[in-house]
Length: 481
Ligand SMILES: [Zn+2]
View 1 (spheres, helix red, strand yellow):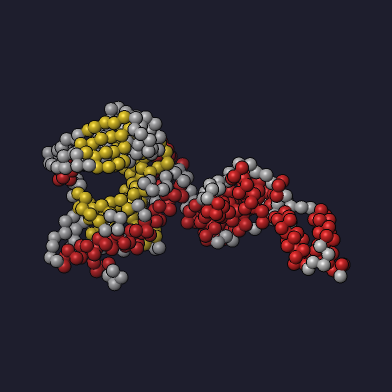
View 2 (cartoon, rainbow, N blue to C red):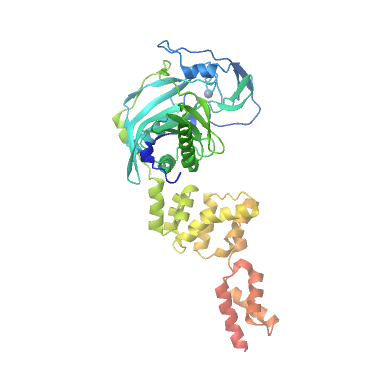
């Protein structure tokens, strides 16, 4: 695919990024946690065909219903109430979720709607018990500049996530209700993206913006990206459910290749929604949804967002800017700066770097993010260290009470015994060390310097500074000779 001229091909790509918000569900007060426990109850449902308000049949709806299956829903009282089984009306909107989406809208320079409304979007499979998903348009016409290119953001939406599909047999399809109703953002770009590589960059940049707020979930299943694409003389295709953004270029290249190959064979290319396979090719899923799918949610009031409210929203420092600042302000490597941000330790790092001036910034960062990782990998143990313990260790190191060579042992000891014992690792006082060295030299008359050094270092391990020990030995050895 390397020699393909995407411009010549008329390639147009748009992205839809969905990400769960790290808060409770959107229209009830249930927690948005997933569970693998045995369900507390099961519900069976059959959805019936819906004809749109204009009296037209939706071809996508017909396609789904032609499968003739019923649904089984698994529910848990810990994360599911009557709303998820469509037996009670929605409660008021989750304010934290709304604020997270308002903040993102402001960060991507979108026009925030002062008056907006909760809508019901018809759902054509069994993933919602009600047959619709609640969705709210919050922002429009935003944009981001990525490597000099202006990428327009058409819409920013707050919506409910769907139920989780567990399995499917010939007769039924099984869903779990834990995920249903989880607060989620949807960011849709205009079809401004021109190359497969740029699609990855845009997805990465938007992901970085979301992450900068600290208000979104991360990890498998919390983020889903859909790709819309078309080429000249081809058809519009929606590729559903990209989990890993590194796969985006290959997925797009495969779809272009598929359409070009069909064209060569003189075959017609069907527009539609396609599911991405593990090998990054795709399989036909269903037709593109028809247009008459959205109508107002009459159980909820209109949402008003005042300009005063919008003005009050603070914009956080972007991760990208923070990483550059840590590198230049504290002379950290790009790797360490990013690790601090990733581990959520950058504020702690800055606090310590400004407080404990005897230590290099690199050493502080190394202790915060790299040593625990090393210990976890080497000893197969969860090397979690709380902030208070980190500070005690760094403070003792700064004042010379402990040596940097004992940090790994100190932390390992702490994670194993859940207790921090700095006394055990306290560096020996120079006068005491001198006495010890004199006695070792007397007991080992005639041994060369290197051997004496070995005895001292193994006897006192990390409690002595090698340089100090070697200076003392040299002083007495010289006198002896
Ligand atoms: Zn609920």
